[in-house]
Length: 123
Image 1 (tube, rainbow, N blue to C red):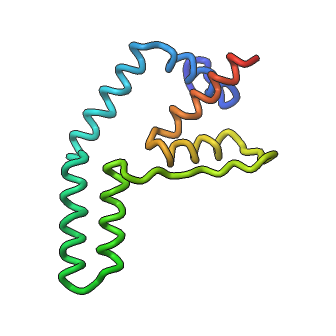
Image 2 (image 1 turned 180 degrees about the vertical axis):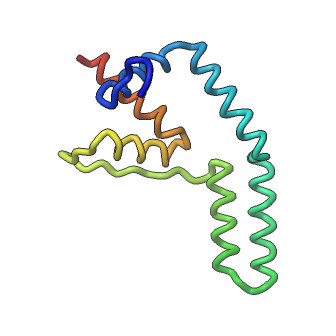
C-alpha cells in the first residue's frame, strides 16, 4: 500500500476519500467512461436479451427464453431482490459489502468504504 495506507486502515482511508465530493465525482466520471467504452447501456442490454429470447423461442428452447426475459425484467427494474436477515445473524464486513453490492450493483469497494465510514461515525 502507498501514501501511509495499510491493510488495517485502508477502509478508513477509502471512506475519507469517498467523503470528498470531488473524488466521488471523479470516480463516477471514470466509471461512466468505462461503461461507455464497453458500450454497456440499458437499451443495448435489453435489446441483446430480447434477441436471445427470440432465438431461443424460435428453436423451442423455452428455458433460455424465459431466463432472458426474466433478466430483461430485472434490468428494467420490474423485479426486486429480497434480502432476508435473520435475527442474530452476524456477517463480516466483506460478506455484507458483497451482498449489498450484488443487490445494488455498486462497486464492492465503495460499499466497504461506506460501511467503514458509517462505523467510524457511530463511534
